[in-house]
Image (cartoon, rainbow, N blue to C red):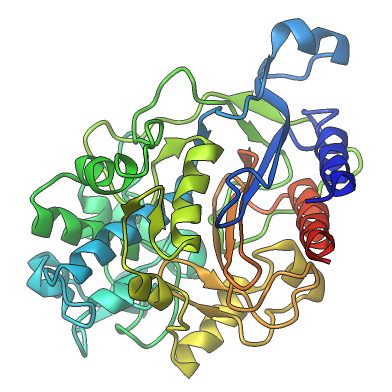
Length: 427
């Protein structure tokens, strides 16, 4: 990577984090190739800050600067780890990728499909026309949703009296097991709790709880020791922007008004101490997460440890959606999910879904290759694996809501310069 590119990236990160209460509170960008674990490393901003805005002169003694190994709330970045866990069991012949999920978690067969609500506000249901499959869970085509990814989600939550996702300190098993499907299995794409069901399969088949499985079969082999579901004092603060309510990755955040109130900072909301699911909940550092990405970039192996076969990794990068599924994905999910398609106001041509991640469409302005695998977490934690350009990178912030415009503006600058530097370095 040319020194001029590194200097430009450093400058972008510094300038975007000058005022953590009104710009980007902190940013870390780490990039690597198959052979270079540190193509670029840069970070700036603050891990911990007073709840309400203080003057710049007070930041130095009232705040704690971000470090390269600071622990972030990863939210849906957890899904990559849950997917790898399931695919390991597929490789071992213990789980059938195209098999029915009810063979492993019988409870899934009892769930009805929500048709809508009658005039009295009561839900109306129909039977599943076909069983949910493991592949549908991996691709969010099973019928399970988040309340923010379907128009009926908030109404169902009100009717049930609990969330339709099993996260948060007060979550119970009912937040997963008592929630119906929102469309017939395989008929459409809706982002939601499919990976939570998937990792219930992992637990049933392996005989291990999810946290133990991930540690034994993914984190320990990759020499990762700070990714876990546990809360601790090393976690950085979450920042809340005042422009909108926090949303799932399906709904981009608002651009801040010129006179918008400053962000507020708080400790992360704890998850249940006993329930662990693969859709959200992991905390960890950017360097550790990048090791997982590098393993996938290298075909499933890193430093002599193999977590997946190369052909399984190839499958993760293979488009999975049928034409009807792709239509709903591009219309409802992808547009606005990253800065480049947001500017265009639509999904890129050929945008699709692999196994546990979006597949970049054709013609991304930054230079990212088509069929790159990428995804994100609700608090603006992003990852990309570009096999054609031999590049993996993470960009973490921990600011709500998802897609807050200053975060996306910085992402656009960083990714564009990163790819330019990569091209210049190969010239």
